[in-house]
Length: 410
Image (cartoon, rainbow, N blue to C red; front, side, top):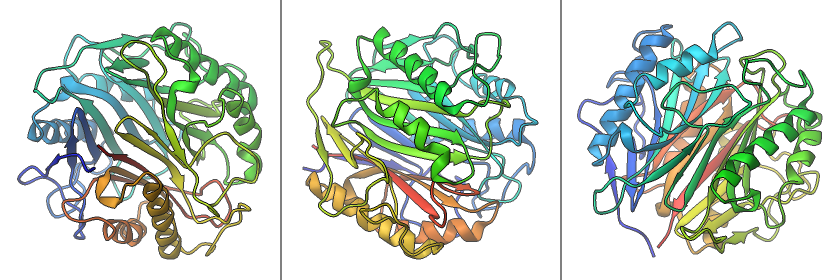
């Protein structure tokens, strides 16, 4: 059964240069999703080109405008993912402070995952921020509990390392950095993966949860687009989950903000308000693609009304790339795979509330528009919120797009 939902496109808000079915924000029950907000004008032209601080302020104001159009505000945020340009010369803590200053004082505030990139989709665009917010269906603010993790780099107030709101638990991106900003196990992705997973477990434990309450894990790791970059670390992370594990997405980055940081992971988990593990179901369609090594993750996880799909790609069941290097063809295959996973839950594209696409490309509108137009065509207008992020490479050679989905079903 489809849940009722409302969409938002504020008057005069920025737009893509091509027509798409997506809207800037969508509200479904207690959940609000806002696609990546950027500093464009209504004609799709980048504003304040090359000025990260000014773009950050503008992006957060755009985010607030979309939220208010859905009857909520920045005080209802539970999660931010901030994609920003950084070749190692920018101070990530300063960037996080610029984001935090736009949030209401007090707290606890949302969790955040900062993802440094060589470029974003349009020349001169330096930051794109997507968000999740929550507010009661009756319009009342929901109670929340936040955690500031000890022993790791502190976050500027009111940002949190972990946040619980209702049955939802969000753990922001954690890495192997100590409280003084020093990198632990510099350059060792396997050891750092263990540290990160232990820290995630510590945050989850603070809410009475455990790794097996996770429904989605995203990992951003330093690598060059080779299987060898992520295999060892993937095996370490996998040991923290019993089968069936959560849905998963892993993205290679040329580097993190601090030299020697190799990996950063964030998790969404769900736990009953009474502290009990919530039942969940999973989907793995017959003949669906698989990883070259056995991992506990599933292509789709449903818990309550929430459906999370790990990044869907154009691979065979043996982990071989289909249509190597062909962005449009691989986008179509990935969307077909998404449709199959959703169908396993009795859902369809019109139940999707958020789409995130990672594709091979740089600061070029052409690459974004090629995959965006294919993705957009799968949805009935008004469509879900969306974010499109270019990367120099993905996890496999000649694989050029990976698309993850959040859907909601009654």
